[in-house]
Length: 397
Image (cartoon, rainbow, N blue to C red; front, side, top):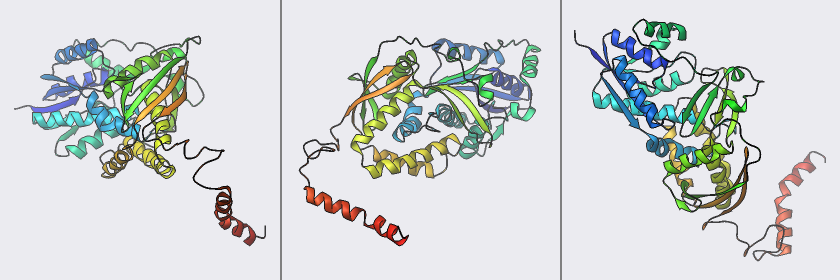
């Protein structure tokens, strides 16, 4: 009997290790695919490949998708200044969509009959992977062993141990998932709405309070991060540099409380230095170069785009429409933003752009200007309030 071929989204953790062995025993030839969206040091990628071979996969494929992640997802999150709940930069949401697309691409290249992922039935990721796989490869069989079997972590460990495969025990009290756009942190404190995560729970640990202020200049070209302290960098390199620098100051730490796709409230800790530094800088530059009406409408579009990505609707046609708007809005978002980093905080000190709409030669807020006279301003102010005056009179005010 010929084997079916399956491509498995493979992280190298317990769940996907179990899936590899289980699917192989069910008669599948398993190709594992690890999509690198940041956060994987070379030695970890090597150990993941070695584990795949040990588990009996017929092939392991590593995809460097950091550039794809930025160009296909992160650039729009920056353009939309997207922070869910005004706080969380959607790091996991963007990475899962990107990873799912890349897994499907490999599956098509390999001509397999099945796709698989190791998500449980409890969280958002199962929905993101399911929707992506069914949207892009609905003709392929979808396999989800962890969700289907409903096994506990202990049962998975026992299953593998019986076959001579001993997975390392879970280290520490916190679950940490690191990517280019941020690191998520889960622990007992995130299971309720009151407790705070200790500083030690974050990858960079406790932040000294006596760090000297660090000036920083971020440059953009049409909304794309392009330079750091005057040095031109590609967006991926710049994001990675900001993550290293921002972690030293504890920038972009927090706990996000919000609604999950399944309809319950959830809470997660995060550390996203580059995301917070770039969105803070980008928003300030937009204030200088875009009109008030553009800024107002962009906030609505950015929030909608973020919701679609976060909630697994990335393949709705509306997403491309919103991306077109966001791209158009960035034509003049070119310039530099001057920041100062302090422990756990960012201060914006200045911004400049060749497309600045702030011109002291024409008008200065609160001072004299050359565009209108005092009597013209008085007439404008009178007309501006007519509708409100009439409304007030009609109510007998």
